[in-house]
Length: 98
Image 1 (cartoon, rainbow, N blue to C red):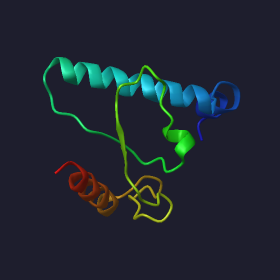
Image 2: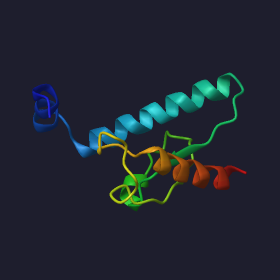
Image 3: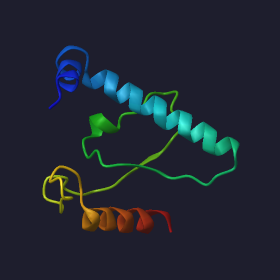
Image 4: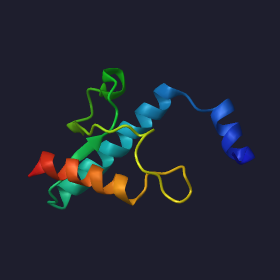
């Protein structure tokens, strides 16, 4: 891991701040898409109810996607989900919104 990443996670990162920032980004995306009349669907892969807990100011409904990040097919870098994993997730998303 690059030093700047290590320093960030060692000295600044907290789970609660990470969740708050995620909800801020989701809410801002929601309001922007709503303002331009775009249909939108928001998803999460967090299975833990604590992770799904939303602040009262976040109007977005998050649809959970169930998959095991640790066993899904990997990309060539062996870190990120691969093409087949993206297909599986896309199919589950499609099933939820159709």
